Amino acid sequence: MRILSVALVSLILVISFGCAGKQTLEIATPVKSGVDIKPFIDECAQLATAGKGKIPGWKLAAPADTYDEESIFDYIDGAAELYFAYNFRAVAAAEYQNGETSIIVDVYDMTNPEGAFGIYSLNRYSAANYVDIGNEGIMSGTNLDFWKGRYFCKVYSFDMSEKYQGDVVNFGDRLASEILEAGEEPAVLGLLPQNGLIPKSARFFGRKLGLDNIRYVSEENVFNLSEETKGVVAEYQIGDSRFDTFVIVYPSPDKAFAAFEKYSNHLVGKNAQLLSAETANPETQKIFEVDGKFTFINLEEQRLTGFWDVESQDIAETFFKLF
Image 1 (cartoon, helix red, strand yellow):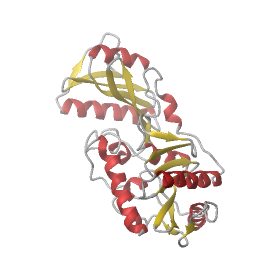
Image 2 (cartoon, helix red, strand yellow; image 1 turned 180 degrees about the vertical axis):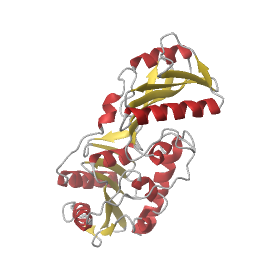
Image 3 (cartoon, one colour; image 1 turned 180 degrees about the horizontal axis):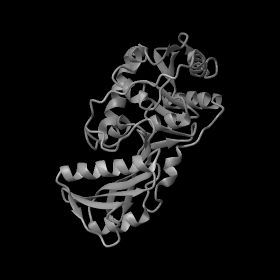
C-alpha cells in the first residue's frame, strides 16, 4: 500500500517540478561523503515515528522503512535524481492507520538546511496554501510539505476529507516539534532586489538539474552550474509585466565571468538580438531581445544576475538598474 502510494506521489512531484519547462536528460548522482550514514537513517526513522501514540485514533502500522543513496530508487524511482541535486542523504517512511485509511510520513535528510529548503522550494508559488509548520509549509488537499533544519518532510493521505486534513496537520505539527534546529534559508535569497518581488516565489538551486525543474534554459549547462554554485529564481511584477529574475553566486570572479560569456554566446547562437542601452555597461551588462521579449544578464564580481521574458524594453532598462 505504501509503495503504491509513494509511486503516485512521486509522479505528481515530478510533474509539478517539471511544469516550468522541458525536462532534461541529465542524471544527478549522489555525493558520497564517506561518512557512516546509519545514525542519520536512524534519526529519520525516529522522527517519522514521532507520532506514535500521539494522534488519537491512529496507530503505527509497522516500523519505518528506511532508504539511503542506493536504495532510494526502490522508493521514489523516477524522482530520486532530483533529490540528489539537493544533497539527499537518507529518508524514512512511516505508515499510520485509522481503520481503512492511511497517513504516510516521509522524512528526508538533505544534509543541510540549504538542501532541505531547496527541494521544498521547488513547489513554491505565490498562491499556494502556506501553513505555519516547521519553517514553512504548503498544504494541498491532504498533502503537506514543509522544511525545518536539514529535513524536508511530507505528510499525506489519499482521503481528501476535512477530517484527514486536520490529522495530516496534527502529524506535521508533531513531527516539526521534534526537529530542534530550525536552520536558515540560503543566503543567496538575500541578494534578490525587493522592488517588485512576489512574496514566497523564490526557489533555490545549485546544480543544473535544480534549475531545469524551475526553468528550463538549455540542454547545455550554459551557466556552468555545479556543486559550488548557489542560485535562486524568483517571480517579479512591475506594472502589468510579470517575469522571472535569477541570481547565481560562483566560487570566484573568474568562474562568474566564464558563465557570463558562455550564456551571452548561447543567446547569440539562438539568434537573440543584442540591444544597446544608455545606462548599461557593455562589458558587464547585456540586454537581448528574444522572440519579442527581453532578457538581461549582469556580471558583478562573483555574481551573475538577470531576468527573462520582460515584455517591455522600458521596464527591462528600468529593472536592471536595481542590480
